[in-house]
Image (cartoon, rainbow, N blue to C red; front, side, top):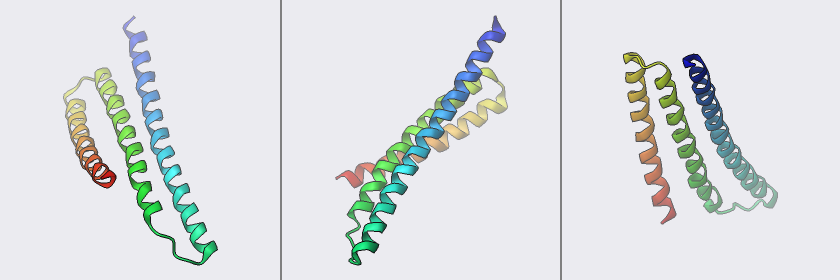
Length: 115
């Protein structure tokens, strides 16, 4: 029975990790698409367009990054539950601290750009 739970948690952790990568890649693709459209319009009209369109992309991409990082933290927690060793716990703490710090400052920047 313990092996069955271990397999389920491992697959769940892997699935969440893949989901977080999909979220990050979706945000990247949307940001890149918006940037390429802006540059295409800029080239076509031969008049420099205002950069507001690009500056609107940053908070959108940032929100995707924050969501992806949150999913990665959940995946790390599940992985640590499967391997509760000191090295894994220390690794989770460091990764969690780094991701939380990045998330805090990214969230702060997004909030400032919305005002």
